[in-house]
View 1 (tube, rainbow, N blue to C red):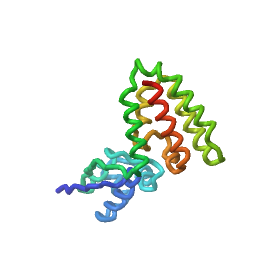
View 2 (view 1 turned 90 degrees about the vertical axis):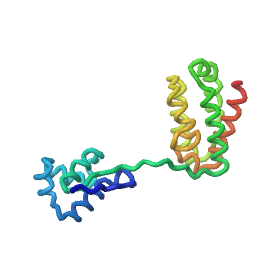
View 3 (view 1 turned 135 degrees about the vertical axis):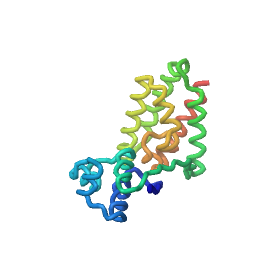
View 4 (view 1 turned 30 degrees about the horizontal axis):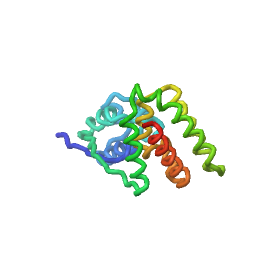
Length: 188
């Protein structure tokens, strides 16, 4: 009889789920190897986290112990500050107006605003984070990667940021929002 094992943990917790079920079912690595056909050293690497275990691999191993994997996906609203939410809305508006025909028109302004932003930020930690992100932005613009630009503007790492670390630096984030507002108003 199969029971369903449901998890909402992060991807790195697959090895912990495997370990837990092995403990509950009193299944050793060698027995699981014989039941599944997966070599025992591979099972050991899965359990130690040296080799990442996919959902399919985990489900296959769990089925050998009378369990199944059920992955539950749910929508989570990010906890954004008022400023971050305002910034995200602005970036979303920019992304909605950006297309194959507007990108070549907006490109020079985007590049200029990014270079202006680089000139306004000072301090070693800020410059380090900013340089990496601005270089990535400039690369996306140079390659005319419309999808990449839109993902960065509205993506899961934070509103308008390639690297969430920018949000922990208020003057950099404010500068990015300021540059985005200037960009939007100058590109109309």
